[in-house]
Amino acid sequence: MTTLKRIIGKDIGEGESLLEVVQQAKYNLDNANLRSAELQGVDLCGADLRFADLSNANLRDADLRGANLSATNLIGTCFRDADLRNVNLQDAAICYADLRGANLLEARLKNANLTGANLSGAKGLPSQRMFIKQFERNVDGVVVYKAIGNTMYPIPEHWTIEPGKYLEEVMNHNRTDECGCGVNFATREWCEEAYPCADIWACLIEWEGLADLCVPYSTNGQARCGRLKLLQMVRKAGSD
Image (tube, rainbow, N blue to C red; front, side, top):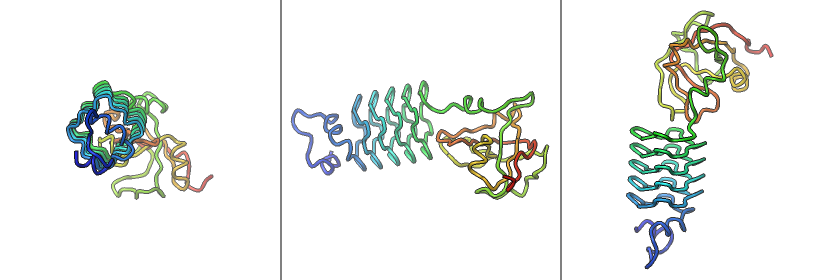
């Protein structure tokens, strides 16, 4: 492991295991080459693994709480039953990784690539069902809120901002994309705090529209859908 020698200043000595050496150097493993490493059960709590190559490594049952794996190569890595609470996986390539049974509570997954990853039985990921339960419901669907005008995004030319009109967009379904195309919505409180100079509209996601919904894993309170029906303006910009 030439990369490990460069990082900790020595080779693996007689009687030492790779697992022991990695644990000793865990706060200085950025850019480490650990491809296909056998690290089952390793303690990497709080480790710095930014930009490291852990592709096809075995990290089953590993403790990675609070570790920084941002922009790390995790293609094909085994994280089965690993503790990944509060781990930073932003911009990481996690394609085809085995995350069965892993604990991902408060894991940061912004812009991570989860293509082909196995998340069966994984715990702690935000539930779209629980997110949508916070909103009022009526016979026609779920009442949500949207800030319009004086936001980060211009109003599309094909939208008509009137009660009863529909706002429609092709939606990005990728839950690791915090921002993506679609019709964004949130709670009224979130809209008012985030966009104090915008109009706030009450909107309806009709029941069938819930099939076209995306709540990002890293949501700070907003989500997106494919279609919203404008109900009524509940706050005019500048009225407060």
